[in-house]
Length: 153
Picture 1: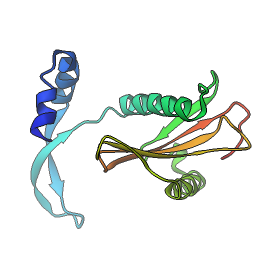
Picture 2: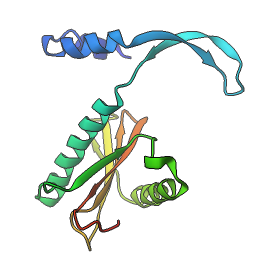
Picture 3: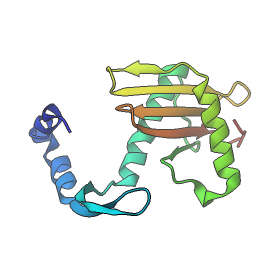
């Protein structure tokens, strides 16, 4: 974490976030890929629900930005952080196909090395879209919007 990022936590508006982050800090054992213990290191518990909610709002905002339409009430926004519904081969295969298609799209950059994304809009089902969000060049997730008509991307 950079000094600049740490200094931002001093902002009175960030006090709650800083407290939550510090309360989730702990030391945990670390192991090499082959299973050898290499000591303890600091670790943060990640509030997956919070990340999913933020990513969902980002996707809703980008959807509006690119379509001039809101994600309709009743339509679904799903975010995948490496945990797939049911972890079935079918779901993982479908997400791999979506990701492969997203990789063919140009990446849009907001803030140098801060946020990048690519997206696909479904021509046949205009409420369906797929999004690849990349934060700080190493925190990646896939999100989709699905219309009530249940069309498939």
